[in-house]
Length: 328
Image (tube, rainbow, N blue to C red; front, side, top):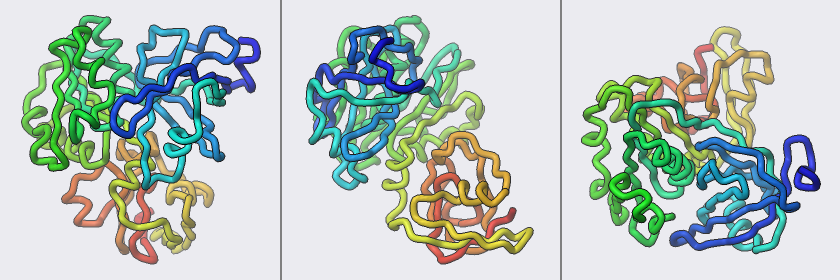
């Protein structure tokens, strides 16, 4: 790939086009800096992008995986975020070269006889890539896209075009979730072989999670992707502060500083904690809390379990109290 590859797992990509897609959302068309072909990607993949200012951010690829000449990502400007999205909006221009890692997929589109896709806000990005694939395959699928207003709906013209006719329903709630998509009604029935894919803000993903549990969807047919920093910002009203975790079986106490997860601290101290997504969506690292007040930052636990404060996902959640005692 010539000069396009700067390291074994890195790419140099030139920004060929920047397009406003909705209020506060820009898409970036990225092409090889040396004009060669791009490594293939599958629907649901993302790029790790080195953003000006020293940030490393993950952005889902939202174009058709059949396209080998370009990658397309979309970035929503978040004034309350940590600065990566602002840097993309304010400092990246057409012609700039960005360094990225190779595409990676933690949200694969698996075989199904039918698909229900639920996207909220900028969560449309990996779902849009899936829509391209499903439409080309001719399988049964439908996308429910939830946003505040038409003006806040990224890729609205494309999704409303004849290419996707009959497959997309828009839900605009005006800021009141009760006026938006009725998730419980949508998921009350399931046709055999149907898979559900969901990506979006934490409250939407939590509502979908609770609905699939209530209506007994098979766990292996339900797939979520969360943007971990987004989920944390949406769920928690606390800044990261240091706290202590105590392990009941040994009495050992470990400090969890800002920027570290409970999961990482425990691993560093020799405790084996099963995990999978490490974004608060799958529940693999669910741990019983014997004492203390967890700060839940996941999208997995239903509200009743959050209120009970007896369990937490140690991959993303932190503490509201100075100390947590874990059943390990």
